Length: 180
Image (cartoon, rainbow, N blue to C red; front, side, top):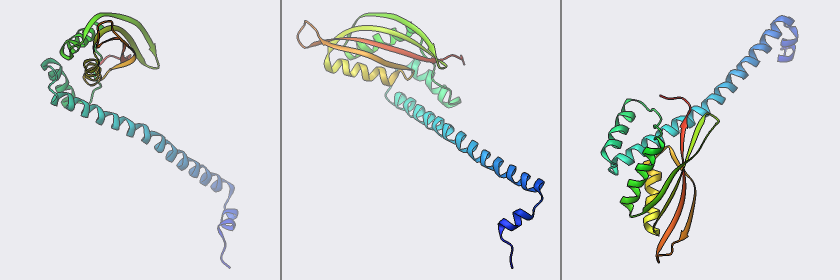
């Protein structure tokens, strides 16, 4: 009669049985750790690919020369995260973009600065007016040309002057706490 696995395990000394059980637990923990680490790494790789595609699209669209020159070496040298603009530099870039789109910026002010979960959040409040298509083109330009800036809130209302619209826009600059 051939002994089964249960009989074979029962015949082992307790020390060997404990060592086998510890080995099985360690193998299960190593597999769980591998799966737990693989998913965040895959998400990070996907984010780097999306950022590279965004930079390539901005370069192909003919973004102004200093910004294209600054983003080209960064993408060629390494996949370093984009550098968040200073609030005043962002106000200047948004004003240039607005003038290019045909939107008139009436005021821009720095808002609150918050820090949480490893990110710094600096808000800017902008008031502008223009035609609806010009405002849509301006918002699209902000989203594509400023990867570390997000539109938190905006209010669109009709202006007193016919087909013009008034927009109150709140932008946020997202930056990590560590400086490269």
